[in-house]
Length: 292
Image (cartoon, rainbow, N blue to C red; front, side, top):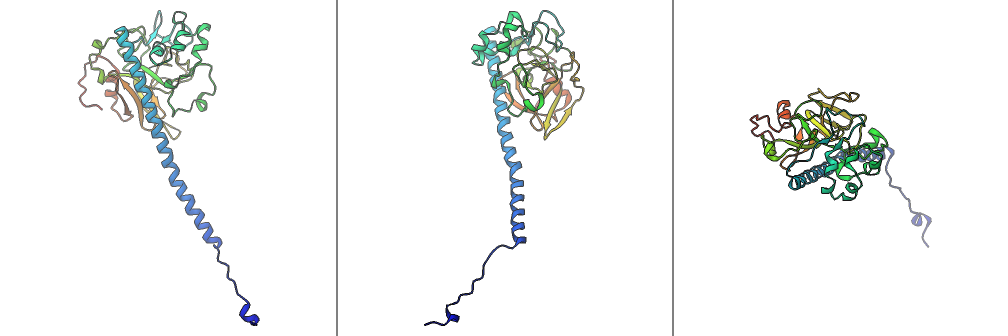
């Protein structure tokens, strides 16, 4: 029989000390903190690519319209100008003209352009949300809450500087315009057709041919990490219904645009202000060179 001394086993429990546990937690927290920005950047890159694809689809639809009608769609249809940002008038915007070329024939069939954008008969169509008109990076509800109109983040280029929307604009989409490609003297690859825009107060939706769907190249605005960075800040005040404003996005550092030749690209907010004005005009005959 073994003695108690031989049968008794002394145990020593192995475990983390409190200090060691806190160090491990701190290291995990640092790693997670380093990982989250990278994940957010990847997600934003995917959203920006999706947004660029929307620009391509809008450019393709505009080209198909031009093939069918031998001119680009009117930027807005109205009897008189200049156009102000108020729900009064016909104001049928170019996005309405493109519905049939964006596989939205059902909405097009239920929108009577002759009655105008704000007619009660067109309200059901005007309220429809169309994914191609929306940038996935833009937080609509945080900015506007619930609106009773279909939303959009893309606008046609009506002019190279801040002027009212009218029949004498030098862009490619403006009041009652019917621009043929032969009239784009600067070259379709040097002229903005459609770009991203940040909606202003009083947004009237994608059907309205006001500043809600038309902008100029007076500025580029980018929003990054909640901060608004303005370039060429002669932008329209949100409360001024006569003003139009420039292009902008919620991507960091610039804006996605579709040029008149159908190509889509990202334009940096660091672009020279003169070059920005030139690519908003269809026929200023400036020597562009390699501006891209």
